[in-house]
Image 1 (cartoon, rainbow, N blue to C red):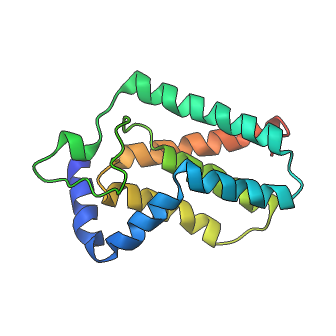
Image 2 (tube, rainbow, N blue to C red):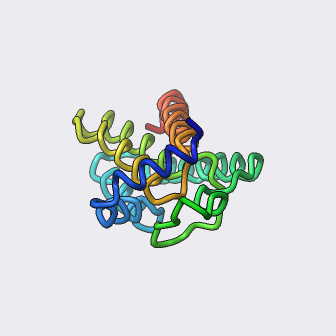
Length: 162
């Protein structure tokens, strides 16, 4: 099964919960998620300067990969059967999913710094699902985003940022 068909399948199955998925996806745009993340980290006595420099580094990595691969988003490449339903209709490239990378990174940081919770396992899955349901990412974009988020988390731990 090719990835466009997977996105189409996810869109069809998730139609009843699309407003919820759009909301969840919207929360993970940086202008909302980063301030919330900073507030949580502040109360955990994490060095916010180092953490935010690390997040800037993360963004540079993700944007660089997007520019190197230049993959079109599903709703732009398969206009005949994939709808672009994200309220923001992103124009940047598809691969990898920044939302998924940040969801994995944030969940792992929160898991380590605050408390282990099954919600922190489910959150990145919901984010990844939302990105496919909204027609802005393929499955490989989402899975690669998770992997990059995991690698960056490990690097942050190694560098004593997290």
